[in-house]
Length: 632
Image (cartoon, rainbow, N blue to C red; front, side, top):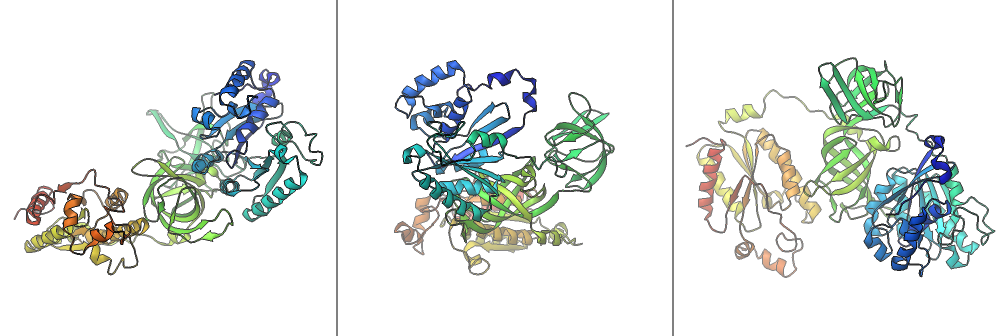
């Protein structure tokens, strides 16, 4: 990575820390000149050390794309793969300053496969420079990055129509591209758009006005960056402080540490802690430099209260008269960042600020066609797609609408198995129907029903390949339990698809919804005090984990019927495996669709080496040892 210095005249000025800060990013399609643009800005502002220039000159000869001339893109492209390929892969951040302003710039990749990195870079920026190659004009990635920037709340966009030197600085070509972009951006609703013709390679209209484009009378890029007004709404918004840490060094002190994401607070102000809705007043605002009379957005503080109330990490402290929302269902725009599709009903971890909970996509309202901005119906989202979804979380979260507060309105989705960040979301609004649905307390509960039946209610979840023998074993087990006087019910995958799930196919999305519905039915049956036997292929670990999480304590037992695929294929009375091998059946588990074996099943049954009757003997012994049934 190259060293970037602040301006020599600025480095000694005590007032530099008081200069306003502009956070901006460069984005656009691949090879539009983003890294070169940032390198040109640094070079023109004389912000590069002499030794760095010497090193850059040598690297330009080895890695450059400018025929041996100084390749300014290498100032930003620091990864070896970036220099070898002449592209940006990771987000590169740079700090620099001029006499008028300080800047933090994020150079983001243009390749479609790295769109997730672009979204990451945009999440904290106030302005986006979207580069357009003057030869190619507005392309798909230009539109996609514009959509993402708009969704992420960036109101100021500079359209840098770059490489004008390659179109002979043609004013007509510039006007054509400007017209195309403004028509598209007008549909999005981007409020502030500035278009600048430039050549980042030669420095035209970057920090100095170009003599080759006398027809352009607007600002240079640097003039625009130094003068744009991006006054943050955070300072004037309602007070919000997500609690990062509860400090309890001794019996005499309890403080709540965090950074104000918006608003201001003073000692004596009335506050409320959400989601518990407990109230108190501020006693002190403690910092390392002493107590504050007032804290404002961006201040990191330790808040003490007049009352000892229960507040934990992840709670949000607000002023009593301007509370954030608390809900377990909401609508949000989502940018999907994983090569595995987003599936309705699949559980993900949602992190919003310091809060973390499990969520499901309850409905995919539509996907956005970035070319036409058309809303498209779909049941899943693929890599780099954008869509509007309804989400349900297992416990209520505290949030603001994203347009009001980026920190409390933005979230990420994490795959529960791989811990990969798979999506970024921006909350639009809570689903009001969630406020109207409350749990109805009843007097006869699950334990009372189980006691009446002299058994422990539970869910026995059989999983395995088609032909593994799970349905046979489940049926024999129910017969054995019935003979003992147990109260049971068997939910079989094939049988349920004739009724409750007859509308579902065998795509990944349908399989997820299939398991979600069956899980909820099984919960109701366990609540009725029954030993509930579920026999489903249930190929995905994520859905089986979701099912487990919907039950209390040790009510869920995963039983893996482990039968080798070659044996399952010999037990194929319906000829399904043969049809799948021939390509006549799509998405068949074990052939054209994956099966993910359990990693921590309560019991593994070896269906290839024991008879069904012997496996049931093992099950009865296991259920007795687990306290599910009494010895007979």
